[in-house]
Image 1 (cartoon, rainbow, N blue to C red):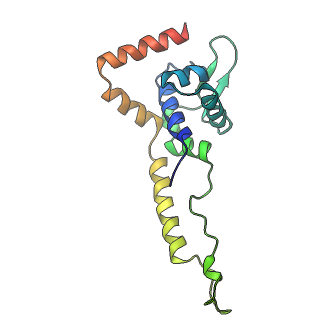
Image 2 (cartoon, helix red, strand yellow):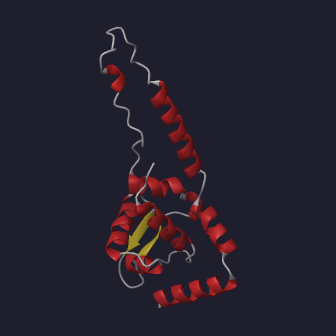
Length: 162
C-alpha cells in the first residue's frame, strides 16, 4: 500500500500543532517552512484536515491552523482518512467471474479468499492506526528530543507567534 507524501506532511504538522498551547495556531506556510515543504501543497492538505474536523482554521491576527480536538482524541487514522479517503486499498473486481473456466453455478455471493485476506489485513492496519493518538506521538517526539532541539523548537514557535 502506498500513501501520498501528504499523509507524512500532515502527520508531522499535527504533531507540531499538538505542541502548541491550547487555542494557538500556525499558518500553513509556517507549518510548511518547519520541514522545508511546499507551502501551497501543505495548505491544500491542511484544508483537507479542516474539512475532516482534525484541525480548524482561524482567521485574523494570530490565526492559522490549530487542532480541532484534544491530541488524545485525534488518531493517526483520522489523518490518513482525511488525506487519502476511507476507501479500501484493495478493490476486488471479481475477476473469478471471468475467463474460460467460469461455471454458471459458481458461487460468487461470498468474497473470495484473496479478497478476504486483504480485508483482514486492512482491518488490522486501520485498527492499529486508530490506536495511535497525536498525544502518543507528540509525547514520544518530546521524549526523544534533546534539550537543544527543544530550545530550537521553542525559539522557532515563539518567533512565529510574535
